[in-house]
Image 1: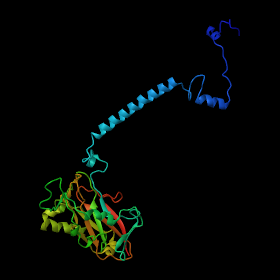
Image 2: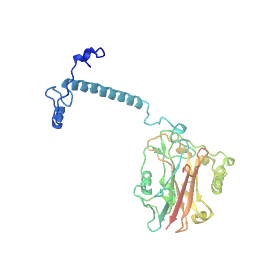
Image 3: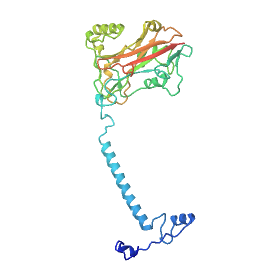
Length: 316
């Protein structure tokens, strides 16, 4: 079709197509790194590189300033001593768990084994915290602690009540040596959590062991102030387990005194400990042991191990 054709755009006549010069791969690579004709490096002239540098300089300065402003705002909302969300508004919730040492070496279905020869609990996993490591914390002195009791309680909320290992009787550690079959229990710390105590015998749960009900009954009549505690019970899961477990004894008492609570991140705070000694367990038999923490506001869930701990123990 000729250039004079009325269907041809007149502007087309101003341009003539010329194919790019043929370059070998080596020449194309060389011109990419530095093109002497255009004065470009890596495909850009110095002027274009300056524009890119200035753009990203201001971009990252703005990004850093935005991040710093966000961090400043976040840190100003955080109190190092008090969590922002507590109890029901937190992920932890308002029902503390029951913790113990020793810990089953391979989960709740594994067997805790006590060696009468070595006078210690055996563990197959090096990463698990041992009883010795757990008790080291309680064999040191805390300057901010005081001796508390049910009568005086704790006058100053910033003070902490001392945990006296001398009250652990036959389970008192001598360095890293514990001469008897003992287990140690504590309540997991939850900020601002306070126990809701049983006020009378009628409020005791029906599933509570009868032995513990008798202890609480005696406490109500003989020393009413001491009823303000989180109670602890340990027993065999079934009748055979109870016979194999035999008699157990708690030190210093069968529960966690209420004057230790609430936990408010006090300096030197140490969770109260209940030491339990198994006096005459049957040897070379797997015993299913269940321990529970009792208060009106402690939930009990065997599956999630909330307020309840299940063990399989064996004495060799």
